Amino acid sequence: MKISSRFTVAVHTLLVIHIYGSSQKVTSDFIAASVRVNPVVIRRALLSLKAAGMVEVKAGSGGASIVKPLEDITLYDIYVASDAAEQDGKMFHFHQNPNPACAVGRNIHGVLDGHLADAQRAFEGELKKVTLADLVKDLNGKIQ
Amino acid sequence: MKISSRFTVAVHTLLVIHIYGSSQKVTSDFIAASVRVNPVVIRRALLSLKAAGMVEVKAGSGGASIVKPLEDITLYDIYVASDAAEQDGKMFHFHQNPNPACAVGRNIHGVLDGHLADAQRAFEGELKKVTLADLVKDLNGKIQ
DNA sequence: TTTTGTTGTAACCACTTAAGTTACATCTAT
DNA sequence: ATAGATGTAACTTAAGTGGTTACAACAAAA
Image 1: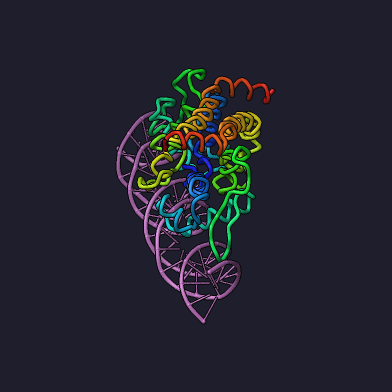
Image 2: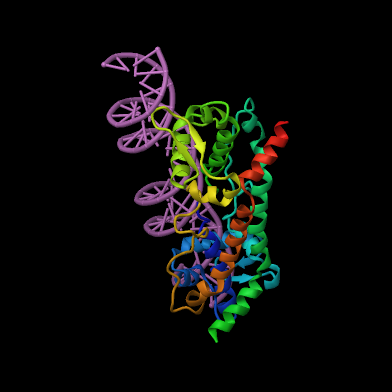
């Protein structure tokens, strides 16, 4: 199944905070207007990013800011922080009770698990290659 | 969210057909006993694998067999055939209406899409590296 | 030709997750 | 105090997954 849009929403949110944060107060309503989702969705995203130590949100007065160097935040970090990754850390859903009385059922995990882990590692490795600093640089280039 | 167990069920199914097919008729009930799921789940898997040209199923009399060289069937092929992959081919769910009036909303796709595609390509690339022949070899080693 | 076993398929159900929405208590700064 | 914002609960809708029952169609064997 598809990876939740919580991930791309979280990336979008961080970019908005960075681009507009220096010139104005960035509220969940403001971010929601750029992402075009309900403000509550943004607040939930901010709660996750805050828990991951990436942003700070001023309760009451309002406004979010990034509190970690952009080059220290990878897409993978955001992927995990946004709860788009699996809780148990495994992308594949394995049928859980293969029959141990069958030669195949007894060995299917031993035969398959390594390859599945390889695929997941390759996927996550790509996300780890890209930092928010890269995205900002690219974005600024496009804005000019 | 997790990748459907339809994928690992399909792999398991193919291995059972190969290992036991030479000595007996392999029915959906037989496969279901090894995978330990409802026989209808196996029949659905066989329908998908049949549509992908990997297996042949005898209606009426029963029994499935593999009709494609094992080294020509990759995990990726099974992943796609089993309907565990996305219909539109994209792993990521992108929020669909970023605001074009916002510098970030207008450019978020341009900035992110390439990286998301890279991650997906790396993931699928790993699955393409492994063939059913590899799994069978490994499995036979473990059975001995 | 009847019987038997199997497949193909429809029709459900239960469960989970995603995402949107409303509502409101709480908080902070003015 | 007031105004604006956040944190959070509650509810809804929709979709997807996986399990299950049921049965018509079919093919081979008795």
